[in-house]
Amino acid sequence: MKSFLGCVALLTTMAACSFLSPRARITMHLVDESGAALADVPIQVERYTHTIPGPELGIDQWDAVTHLTDAIGNSTFTTRSPLNRLGYMVANAPPGFYEDRGGEFLFDHEPSWGRWRPWNPTVTHVLKRIVNPVPMHVRYVGFNWEEKIPVMEEPVGFDLVKSDWVKPHGEGEVPDFVFWLKVERFPDPPDWDVKKQGHFQRYRTRFRVSFSNEGDGIQPFCVKLRTGSELISPSQAPLTGYTNEYVRFSERLSPSHSIQEKWQEEQNYLFRVRSERRDGEVVRACYGKIYGNIDYSLEGGVQFLYYLNPDPTSRSLEFDTKRNLCTPREGENYAPGP
Image (cartoon, rainbow, N blue to C red; front, side, top):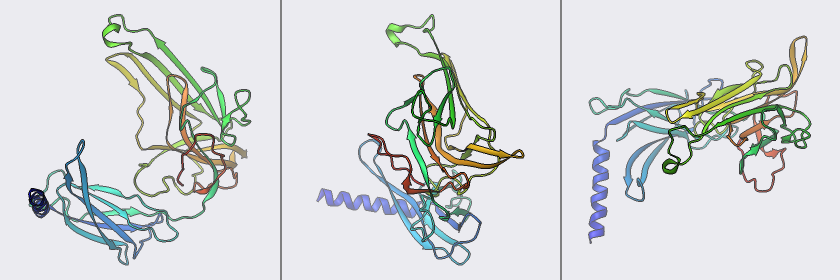
């Protein structure tokens, strides 16, 4: 009886909270990459309802409503939400489109007159078309363990096709990326109590990735890795905007002195290697992308996930996930997306 009454009380409380929550209205506008409206596509909006008590912070519960977009790609949703956020996503991508992981819209922090503001904003969401998936060399270097740079404070080439350091440090032949890392370590501060606080790592690092050919280079692009289209990158690599060097640094000299270069959590990269030029213009090259950052450690390790299109006549950045040209190594179980 107590259990039954508890369930009734919980359901009553949930219903009351839902009824008393501020109203929210949002219009989703669905388009493809060219801006063309997409009609008759199921788009879903979800709202937080309550939290079920449990370990740690409990389990958040959400409910969702799905509508088809109209002839101009719009669909309007009205609901009540205890939080100032609504999630959204394409429920099932139509044939010829990449799957969608959606996004989130945040209203103003405080509601006004029982409504979240702005009232009925139009949120444009892009669904990417599948255009030209191609086989690629894809590898998460250092996925299970950091890949060690063979020699510190010297330039060392990495072959993206062989996925190895160039000879004599590995089986690679073409230095697509050239890594250089310097790590300086310093003794503990004079007033540091090692017995009570342990060793305080003091260091200064300088890290660089450069390129072998004129015309090669790298450029950042910012996209959240866990939202939006399944295809994170552009469909095609741009012809311009590449720089010939990627540099990072960090410094920690005392408990109150720590410096590290600023970079965005949503940072990703496009790159161009094996460039061939004629009359000052790049006429052939291999293009690729890196999802996430290029990370390094004080021990000389590196980690990065790269995709390389080996066709020098193609700028496609769409990876055919069934045709990875890199043979998995022992212990590798990472399944890269497009």
